[in-house]
Length: 252
Image 1: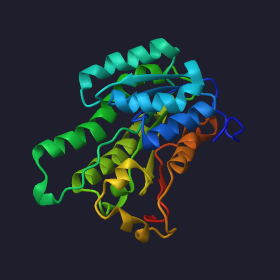
Image 2 (image 1 turned 90 degrees about the vertical axis):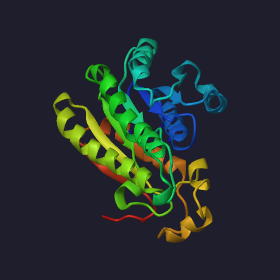
Image 3 (image 1 turned 60 degrees about the vertical axis):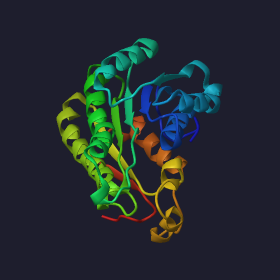
């Protein structure tokens, strides 16, 4: 994606959680190439340092914040500092996520809480804290990154992960209805198995491509392309949608 895109993005600011690695990093880079300003949120200084090396060429258009998003009390200050830095918040991408692939018998309450807290609870409360700024934003958009596991239960991923990603889809539907009156669109992307550190950590990851009709894993850039459409000015009549980027694993 480049600034020669058929889509228009305007002079807008996006928050991308999980933006220091994998899909989130690809989305942040695509937004920057399209001329947007991006606040990259990462959970560790190590991942943010790596992202800085990738995105350094964009200069002041990109800033980095380290935050444990599951600590809800930190979100208000985080959002306020981003708005102070860039002057607006127009697009929010909830991409941060925690994968869990345990068998049911081995899941602990701590496992459950950790996955739900980051994958769903943090997304909701970050949306809540961002709403005052999104209501004032230019063509405001909320984009939630779910998963094919949230559509069909998944193969290698665990039940808690699938539940959290399915919940994020339902949350998208609810918020899309409630926020339409503010002209805020809310949509979800449900990636299938994408080449990433996360997919490599799955058991029998080498077999995953055999379940995909297109016969390969997806690329982070292919998910980023869907995010660019949903962030664009041209997507203004798309809300409450789930865009599947999965090579045909789920069709419905």
